[in-house]
Length: 99
Length: 99
Image (tube, rainbow over all chains, first blue to last red; front, side, top):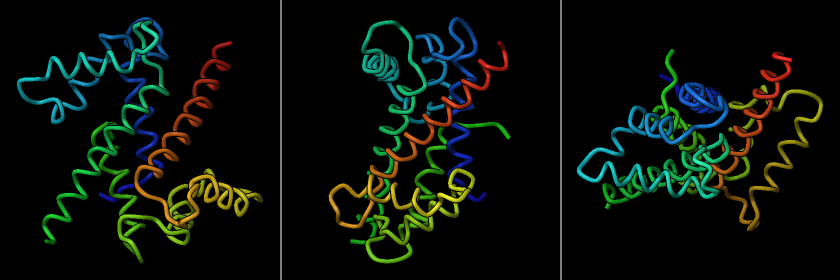
């Protein structure tokens, strides 16, 4: 499969609305929708004994205005932060392998 | 095709290294690599008579420290901003269609 930037951007939008459209405001993720999204989409990141506290931490961080909702822009910030963290891990692995 | 968040994140990393690895620092995009990436991956966004000035504007904005290189974190900021802009266009289209 050939990776494609525009396709990745479309996927981010599609994934967001897949979960945000389930109940309430169709353009925002409520806490239940966010939790479902994290558990279904990012289970590899959240695996392990601390899964519940990681989900809780992400919710608290994203929901700064305490309205219990995450809009698309806040969602993209989360994805960007996770992707940068993954990338750092990936680069470190390559550099260590080349030592 | 089913959209997948983890797959989209992996695609962002794969696309970045596809271009950044071509010359110089393999972990950063130089101006030529950035221009290639924008033209090959985002041609739909850049179509039209202003394509050259849009590419120039994006380069200037991203290259704030004037080192002529864009690292992965700066790349993700660009993708996040473009995706939020696309999403706003998408939401406006839906809302106008429902009026």
